[in-house]
Length: 250
Image 1: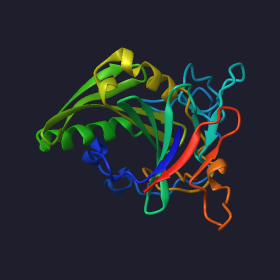
Image 2 (image 1 turned 90 degrees about the vertical axis):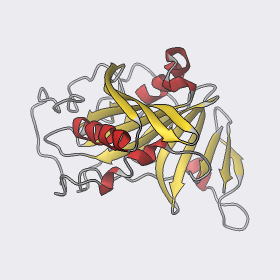
Image 3 (image 1 turned 30 degrees about the vertical axis):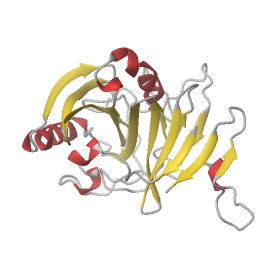
């Protein structure tokens, strides 16, 4: 199942750090990257393109050829369509901002941001999220996870605290953030398929100049942009190969 929806109908723990593009910090536009040594890693994050990153999420230059993965093209994000998982597109003000994987009662929301070419941002972002949670009477523990440092958090929501995991991966001029909620936030077995989906995400950064922490541009997949008889996008249609339904929910 693939859904386009407006993320206003459920609690959103990602609000604790708001949109990364509103945070204070680097504001210099990132232009076309200069050639750099392949062995020079992004501090605290993923190796630069061409270093043969051992696992995903992948930069578009580093995707291994030996494993074929069916992915949806959302622009800067190419996301897998794992068997048994639902993939949703998050829309705010008619702009696609994120992709969400749904596995039963568990969800993984994925955002992609621009980052400086000289350093990663996950260390700073992680600290900002933790501070925001603690100020709002939540909690956050910095732990080592399957993708490196992550936050195991408890987010204030009525009527109490909701468990969540904040994942982060620094890539070459991009930063990928994942938010895990539901049973997968505390149960490793429940999280396994969502972590696998996160690992298969591919980021296409592009060469355009962007301010660090700006959202990378996303769009609906081509299957969802086929016009109906009245010129409007269809309410539902079949994707080739897998055949999940694409529905728009207001």
